Length: 71
Image (cartoon, rainbow, N blue to C red; front, side, top):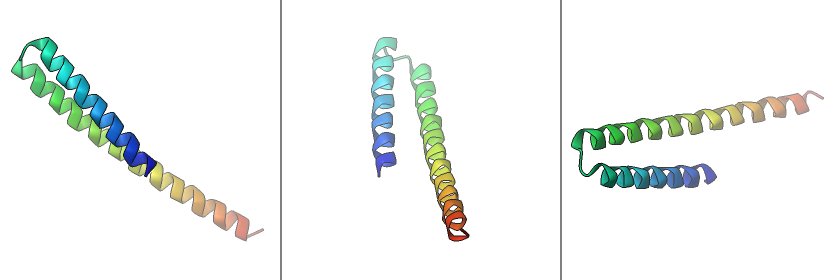
């Protein structure tokens, strides 16, 4: 659940930065489209990182469980 909150906050921050940059650029369409594409990739990387972190955590938890059981 904490991961979802972090992702939501980061996505809102990124959207805010894109809006501010778009206002600063004064409507330069190509640069706005480029920023939106960057946002898509940032979301992908954040979600991939979150997934891999969750999987690694589960693997480590499983290893710790079997390590303690064998004692």
